[in-house]
Length: 340
Image 1 (tube, rainbow, N blue to C red):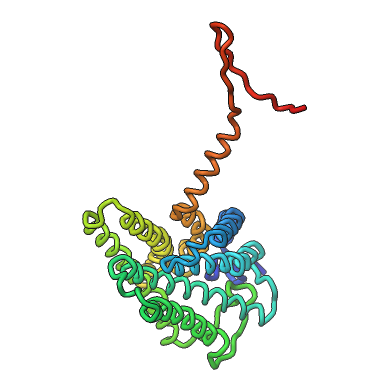
Image 2: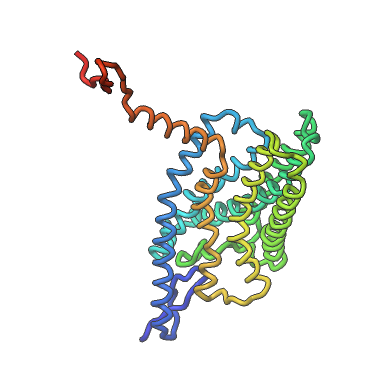
């Protein structure tokens, strides 16, 4: 009996009754390419995240700045995803099987994958909206009550909504999961069998959030450019430029990784059983790897510290010289390194 494979949603092969050796080869090559790229990026991103956390901890102005709260939460969330979700996925595409063949592990993978993606989209959406308030309507944050209503409550709502929604989707929906240990996310939650719930999840938590990120980010850029003459080149303009660059850097990553998948969903140009769809759907993992490096470039405090360190090393590397005159000759000497 001839055994062959057909591709599931990630490119991993599964047994069928038809022979298609070329398809198997293409799928395995695609998986190997994805594994090498994502594994290399993950190993490079982990120390970068740790360095960012150290910088956040050692710089109180960053932790206390109201404009940095969403920024820090997004970094923390992406680090959790990098460790808790990407590691499981890398093992899957390497072995074509789920790491642990248990129901609890499958539920964990479904939950962390869903909550990290959903919360990341909502936090970025809120950051795109809040930047307009922080730059153009700062007076709405003057008092503690105003900050509570305009800043803390929306942020808390985003976190609470995503936690409750993802938990209900994976643990609370009244259906029985049938786990497939040879499929990504063990075949996904049975809640997606509900057509209306699946449509809501895609539209509300992916398409709408992506559209809001695009509109708010582009409109912020145009508003800042339009009013830059008003702010001139003072300290206020420096802060506005920093906040704008921070948002556009993060939102651009989310737009690059989510727009192709959402466009494919709306148009249906790419088949879900194709290798191209596998690459598109896994682009989010690259976001988690690239984000810390992008964040490093948007922190002027960190760049200033690194510049000081370079100057300090350069000064220590150059030994001081002393000049003294002996007759008509000027003699240059350096201090001895061996002191008696």
